[in-house]
Image (tube, rainbow, N blue to C red; front, side):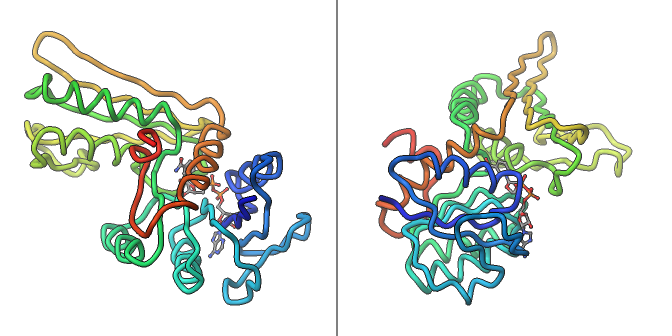
Length: 250
Ligand SMILES: NC(=O)c1ccc[n+]([C@@H]2O[C@H](COP(=O)([O-])OP(=O)(O)OC[C@H]3O[C@@H](n4cnc5c(N)ncnc54)[C@H](O)[C@@H]3O)[C@@H](O)[C@H]2O)c1
């Protein structure tokens, strides 16, 4: 039985993860952490990581960056593997996470859905073939999302950039400039509204044709299911930083 702790257990994603862990016959909910203890869970919820007496086998984190780092300290001290699904980390914070991964197994993905992983694989294959096209990414999310562009948009941009040699720069604020786009840029546009779970489109604009791919998530369950699979996987790994590529090939 894998004992799970959920960081951000009161959040939209945290609640779904708790529900699915509860139904999973190979897992048990050991405890949760969040900003407040609402008292409606059957398992203990802590607001301070220093107060956690339990030692789970794995942590699933859907919270905010500051809370991720609090729980990373706990994970490092107690040698607990962790799945980080939270997004919105700065470049410096991403580097800090790599340092933690030297001391504990960390699974991190800005998008836990299987479909987005297929999207990445397709991009790796087609981006070099469409080299020279203008590349734009458009992402749409619900009106409560804090970070922009989405972690997934950045992940897709990184995938394209890496498969084209790594010298593209990202353009988020075209309105700041009065100049035409550079050939070596990936433009990103964020749309926020309603209750959209997540939609990502990558467009390759050639001179005479446009090629585009869209992935739409209809339910948050897809991310929660992915995080639970990642938790079973990371609970058995050695120290290091893992992502969806490792999960799919295992
Ligand atoms: N990787 C993925 O596939 C994926 C999918 C969906 C969402 N996300 C990311 O997961 C994160 C959470 O998303 P959500 O929709 O559940 O958001 P949410 O706002 O509903 O939940 C965040 C939770 O974190 C808690 N929190 C905030 N500050 C805290 C602190 N200092 N200490 C402890 N807990 C704190 C909040 O109280 C809340 O319960 C976001 O970063 C989102 O972008 C990732």
